Image (cartoon, rainbow, N blue to C red; front, side, top):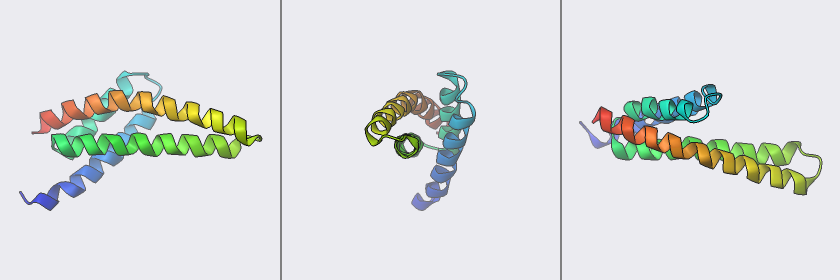
Amino acid sequence: MARGANRGDMAAGMSAMLMLSVLLSWIPGFGTLVAGIVGGKLASGFGAAFVAALLPGVIIGVLLFFLATLFAGLPIIGFVAGMGGLALAGMQVAALLVGAVIGGLLAS
């Protein structure tokens, strides 16, 4: 298989992880683990799954940070709320990474 062929698979894995982690966010740890496993299998490899798991977590964390800062009336309080959202997204990334590693190893 060509080296550039995994690039589309990594994008599919990243988008699946992002969508499934948002849709299954009501299940605290198990939802992001399932999203990581599915996205890791789509990314088809350990390295691609690892990178694909980091990007949705960064995107969600940055969006939570900026939206909390944007919608708060006071900038300082919005900044503090945004940092809390960033910390919550960071905790979700741990389960997403574990699931992505499992899915990437299952796909290999």
